[in-house]
Length: 259
Picture 1: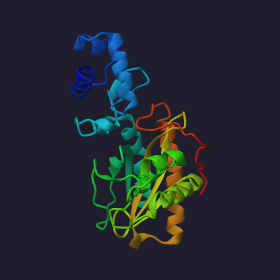
Picture 2: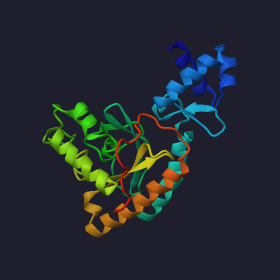
Picture 3: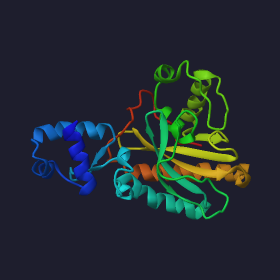
Picture 4: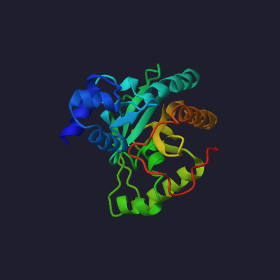
């Protein structure tokens, strides 16, 4: 535990750092640091760049002031800016942290009527479009183990018919390749999310567009789906080299990207 905290504190102050640099700075053997850093990468506290150096990962958002420099956040900013230019609706990047979906980056619309949120905002994963995209990667057996018997009530008060309805929702996500949400996390809000994958096919995050229902019609919905799926694929290509955090390798066929 002491070594893990020391590694994180060093990277908050000065990153990226390689194993040799961390060993000198902390006075800890390289063999020990290899084990510690491997666990921190697996749990999402660190990421490793192409040169083999370590940097803060998605779960370290909020510890330091450098969250905008995370590789996936930097890549998201460029892809999201293009989407924002076309649609002028808020675009978010979310990861799973335990049972919650957490926003780690966002690009806001200029419309005065919009979702009011911020980096670090949390919603229950079972209720949010972003969370459902990640949960859809898990097997039906694991979903049953995690949510069976739980009372599933969304932030706006809609009560799911137990884990059975959640399984039906996730099956649609697997079939369609995206998740939709209407007034389940905020009244009058439509959310659409697609997966962001690394080169191994593991879902790293979810890319989400949030639109007030008053600005949505069937034709615009179809265009948003098409453009967000394309944006998700573009972001996936940019972060294909990243390892996974808080994610499982799919134990079923990957979701189709067709709409």
